[in-house]
Image (cartoon, rainbow, N blue to C red):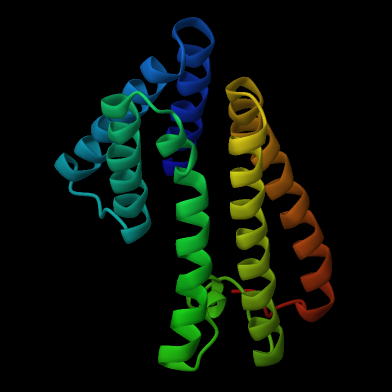
Length: 179
């Protein structure tokens, strides 16, 4: 359900951007994220750290973009989130000596420790690549191109990455080993 809400927010952001411009779209995103978390809270649902971090970045960077009338603050949001997640993977490994992705996916997959460790590095590299790519596009291409990349490009890259990851992991998942 959360994934559907996220996709709806992206779609509405895109539609508002096309008809009203970037600042109206940023304001709409802030409002929609506020409503989404409010509904979750009042329904008694748990709000994850990821959701709080995403919300805070939307409000702070989006609000800064609107206040200073500079869209670059908001364009930094994906890179900040990606870099923080990549950093979280490394910090988790340093702190706990256990693979971070095992903590996230361990309930659904049973993989050898070596593969979990490799998965950490692959995810961190992918997220850092997305962060750098976002900054390059934000600074060197038009806002139209950035919005299209943010909505369609990163989604396509994530799908391709997940398919490649599934193909890579499939030999390591034995029948009856997935939980």
